[in-house]
Image 1 (cartoon, rainbow over the protein chains, first blue to last red):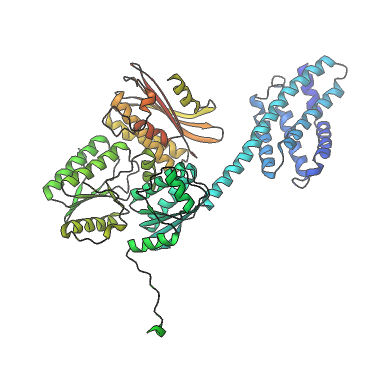
Image 2 (cartoon, chains in turn cyan, purple, red):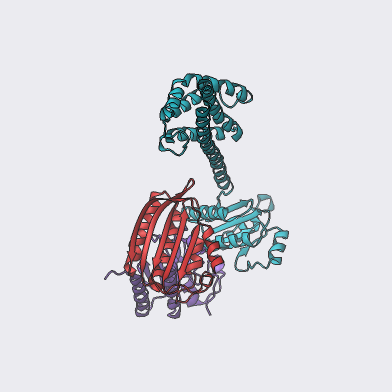
Length: 287
Length: 139
Length: 151
């Protein structure tokens, strides 16, 4: 009986595709700005060809069968690309279920006189497509996660610029919360820049850090300690009065760290350390 | 037996660690170095670790020991050229090497040593160590 | 204690698959450097970043020293593993030493029975993403760590 069903399906590829496209046309009408109907047509055709080519008596109903690797792969690709295009998971899921419905419609038409067989076949097909749906969901989420991870990376790169303010002096304005992942990026960028520029003083400006709790303080102290291990000094500047208050209230000891109220003060301190002097030019009129 | 060479440059000793130290080699270096300080009456030791890719707590302890022992023999120790990844790892490990002076490279390390030794010799009170990363005072 | 163990093991979820696996015996000091090189090779193959590589190798070095000091040497398994879409290196240290009577105590910062700095286990834990320790007195100790490439 099984081979019969496979046979029927393989012979009715074009009918299935047609049915499927019809349902899609109605479902997708509101989303034609994201993807062209021709693309959908191509994707559907590719998917259905791969599915029918690999379908056999044993694997009907078993989505984990190795023969379906190709189908699963193209489903994943499709799902990921749709995630990136901004489709909702529902739309992707409707797309896959549309294929199942189209297949079952064909079977129903052909096996109308053999209800037992029809039932057995649709049950198996349901199992199969359930596992395909799960694949699309999983990959959809992974696709979104990739987007998020990429954006996170971008944000952390954008938000940790190392600026060379003077020969031998680096400044690093930190904007946003300093968590352990951020700290790692900050430290890496800062230490690399110290090596590259041969700087001996780094100013960590925390004016843009909304709050300093004991964890953030710990991250700051780690950064200072690592800078010192490299043979440079690290000054923390941009400490707002309310942050100074919190630090003391929390009992955080910053006594072995050089802190300055503003970047300007930190810069002045750095100049002094490097024995540099900044003076106002004397105008001839004053002489 | 492999040995880490110790170079003498005037009143200073220069050690460049260029191989991954296994324990015996590191312990030998400690002993050799201290003996050389004593023999040559060196005033400073410069340890270049710019090609060392891993410093674990054992290596960290050896470096700390060398610094403390040299100090007893009236010599300053400066560790130079630590790689960023090594510095980050040491901090995460909880080994900030307090009590060891550090500098970016050999040149800066030499400057630092000269400043330290001069300070001792002439006991001048310039505010020289404003930016030196030594937050420790030995008692 | 059992609760403590269970909590620590939670980090290691089941969906980890092993890509490559090799093991080596550690019996003396001289084995440490070649072992570190093998770990490095494995990390480099997975394109792990330099800082994470350094953290992993340092952690490996700490654990292998512990194993030599307290467990009279033992066996290490080096694995390239993957979980979902991330890759990493897993190291498993197995010794037949005296075992650790109180793991919770051994994991506390500043505790050590040997003459080291006492930052062995907790320090090591901070360097890696997943840390799992099992020990039975008189039987031995098994420590397993994972460092993810993007961890």
